[in-house]
Image 1 (cartoon, one colour):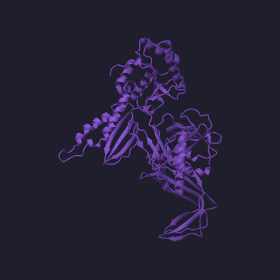
Image 2 (cartoon, one colour):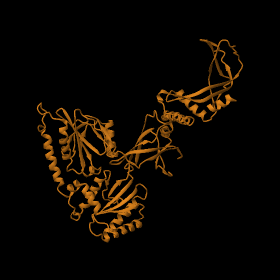
Image 3 (cartoon, rainbow, N blue to C red):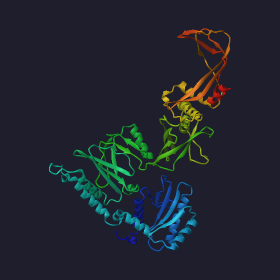
Image 4 (tube, rainbow, N blue to C red):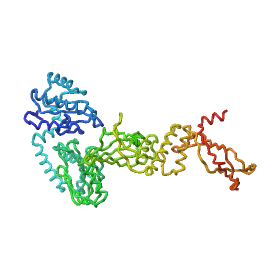
Amino acid sequence: MSRIEWGRYGDDIEHVIGMLLCASNPDAQLIRPSQGDGGIDVLVPVDSDDRHIDVYQVKRFHEHLDSSQKGQIKESLRRLVSFTADGSYRVRNWYATMPLLRTNEYRGWLDEIAAQTGANFRCEWRGLHFIDTLAADHPKIIDYYLRDGRERLEASIASLTALLRQRDDVRSASVEAPYQPAEAMAGLSALHTALNAHDPHFQYDFEVTSEPREIGEEPRLIGAVQREIGSSWVIIKIYAVSRQFVSERPIPVTFTLHVERGSELERDIRDSERYGRPFDAPEGSVLHGSVGFPDGLDQDLTGGSVSMRVASATDHGLDRRLQILDGAGAVLCETMIDMELSTRGASGIWTKGRDRGGAFSLEVFLDHEAGTGRVNFARHDITGRVPARVLPGLRVLANLHHPHLLRFALPFGAVTHPGMPLEGDPSDTEGEHLVARVIGALARIQEHVTTQIQIPDLSSLDYSDAIRLIEDADLLDGAQKTVRWTQLVTHLHPGKELEISDQPFAVLLRQPVELWINGIRVELGIRQTYVAAAEYDLDASPIPHDDHFDAVIVPHQDSPAILRHFSPAEVAAAEAG
């Protein structure tokens, strides 16, 4: 490619350089010039955190910088420093980018304005050699924007479409000259090269199969067309070279849906309009419509289904603490929420997140125009999870009721803003409260055993199992519990004198405590039950039963039972003594 005379193209230079930067950095974003752009022309995420960035300030200057041009560059840097002062973005590098060779004078001047504006990040020059290298690496961008590439792309698509429609050019194999699979490879490769020869924004891959395929999500996949031709299925996948290019050449989608009044689909569509929330319209709900995929791949949607999704898979940097407060504003419990998606609609914002421990997911709807909001929670199956990790989220679910308050906060630091009042009666979350107590008990038991405890299928536990787990955890923690009891059945075997009297007596029981973890029996020690005053139920004792008599013991004057736990080490020491 011959060297580009950048001075010939005037205001087009900045946009073309922006496109070159996006082609080199698939996750780059071109920021539309405005009062609130923060001095950013092109933003490039450094890693998976979209808030850690490199910034390119692009200028069309191609000759010696005068004082006005230097002032523009300095002002852009000052605005960036101010824009990022609150920590919402962390800038790694700032690049003054223009088709102009860097001199020692410019290097010193750049250091000066960095110091004057208080930039706490590296400021560097990206000049003519850098931009020429980008142009050489991405000739289709230069062709499309500065030469006749747009017209040649249209002509190429027309000729390719005609070629693909001439199916008779590839005839069925004959007995005399069977068509070998190896012979097809060169032709398929040439076709792939031709499909991708001129389009700077999209890349096309294709495959031919005997059966239709399920099209899943892939990085930068914007759409796929799958058609049955003869006995084969032809699939063409369309990928955006950079996510910015979908905005550069938008994909027009038009459709009319059949929606029942008051249906869930109607509610989903209204949420999508207001907040940008994704939604699914089932198969057959599209009365008519089309997708304007690029390069002749338009798709008719009539009778089909529609799934509206968020283009970016994640929205990093929005992780928040979710706190539950009592009526006085004191924090009762909190958990960390990993925010996964965020969209903006006509009047508000929709955000989807997940409790870091895996207890639940949530959706947040904020209507800025109405000044209202709502949060929807969905509890996850926690079977097999680690109790201590999932417990914070379960405690939040157990406290989602009046008069408590809900509050989102930054991951760190003091929080002073008020919470949002919650509705509902405490009885609405009684089940969640019991689940949180049981999982809390398992987390406490874990402190006493080295084998990893995993949460069992809670549907297999009845209420008495749950209470027994909670009691075991309390006793393991050293508590001495005083409980009420109703009766105790003991076995009296033949050959032993039956001493059934009407006088009260003391009872001391020691029972082994064990827990089954992943099929392994773990001994936790001994549970001791002491009753200071008990008596036989003379109306029910003794009762012959198989090879023994059943004797029923009941409390004397409501005497309680006192429960204590002795660890295996304490039991061993007592036996040795």
